[in-house]
Length: 218
View 1 (cartoon, rainbow, N blue to C red):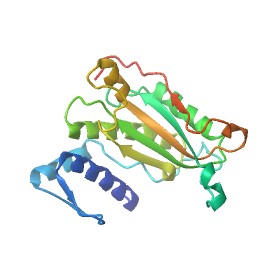
View 2 (spheres, rainbow, N blue to C red; view 1 turned 45 degrees about the horizontal axis):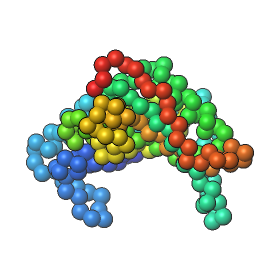
View 3 (tube, rainbow, N blue to C red; view 1 turned 180 degrees about the vertical axis):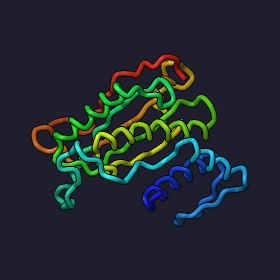
View 4 (cartoon, helix red, strand yellow; view 1 turned 120 degrees about the horizontal axis):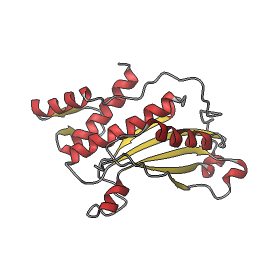
C-alpha cells in the first residue's frame, strides 16, 4: 500500500469510527486511538471487506483536457464553478456496469467542455435504515465503486476525492419509502472553470441521472 493510499484509507476509517463514537481525535492533530480491541476489530473487518483508496496510478486513454487546474489568479476566484450530478441507487452500491458506465461517461463528456477541472468529488449517501456505522460503511462502498470506475475510464486519480456521509445528509423524509429511495444516492461534484459559452447559466446545475432498477430495494 502506498503512502497516499494509507492516508486516504486512514481518513475514511477514522471517519467511520468517529461516527460510531469509538475514536478519540485531539484537536489540530492527525492522530487517533481506538477504545479497545473490539473497536480495532471493526477497523480490521472493514479493511478485509474491501475498503481501499482509489489507486494513484494514472490511467491512459481518456483525457479531461486540460486535467489539472492552472494556478488561480485573484481575478479568477469568482469564476470557479461547481456542477452537481445525482446518481440514485436502489441497492447497496450494486451498480450494473453498463448503467454505471453511462453515468460516468456522461460526466466525463460534460467535463471536456470545461476549461479545466480541479477536483471531482464523489459523495456516498444512504437512508437511515440500519445503524450509523453500517450506513457509513455502505456509503464508503458506494462511493468507491463509482470512484474506481472513473479511474478505470482514465480520469486521473489525483482529481478524485471520496467523501462518505452515511445517513447524515438526507434530502428527503426517511420515514417514507420514496424518501428512503431518494436518500440512497451518489452525488458527483465537478469543481473547476466551465468557461466560454458553456458558462452561461450552467453553474450549480444539478443533473439527476435515471434511477437504477436493480431488483429488490435495500
